[in-house]
Every structure is written in structure tokens, then in C-alpha cells.
Length: 103
View 1 (cartoon, rainbow, N blue to C red):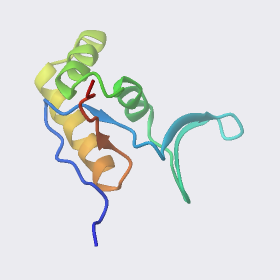
View 2: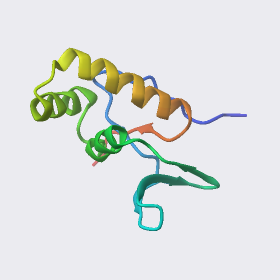
View 3: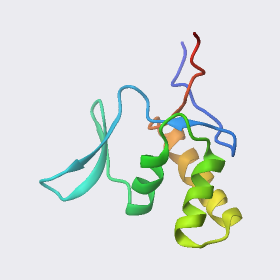
View 4: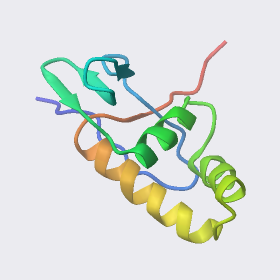
């Protein structure tokens, strides 16, 4: 029996929310949430910002580049934090790897 498709997040990964999960703003609670079947996760502000950049086209290195430029912070530190955060979400089933589009 196959379990969830866990990914190993690296700088070259192109993470994206799986088809069954949606990142949306909950007006009632005034927080961002990831909605998945029978599960809700309320990521912190930084996680939301990272997830908004995870569109399946950018790789983790691109995300780190953008955040490093925006916050004038060391890219290596941001990259390390982003990889850890995304791996945690992937391990919980809230993130998957974008598949190459075949034409």
C-alpha cells in the first residue's frame, strides 16, 4: 500500500501545494490557513510568504533569492530556513513536488 508521496526538499526542488490543499485567507479568524481534506493548518506569516512563492515553477533557490533580496538577509541562512520549513510541510503532506509538464 503506497503512502503519501513524500518529497525531499532541496535547493533545486520546485515545491507546490498538492491539488487537494489550498492556501487561503480566513476572513473570520483573520489568518492564512492551508485547507486540506479534514485538516487545517495555520502557518505563520513567514511560512505564508514562502508558500505564496511556491507556485511549482520557482525552485527553492529562487524563493531564497527573492526573500534574501526583499529582506536584505544572507541567502544561505534564508535558504536553510526555507528548506527546513518546506520539508516539515512536505512531511506532513501539505507540500509536493511540481511535476514536469509534458507536451
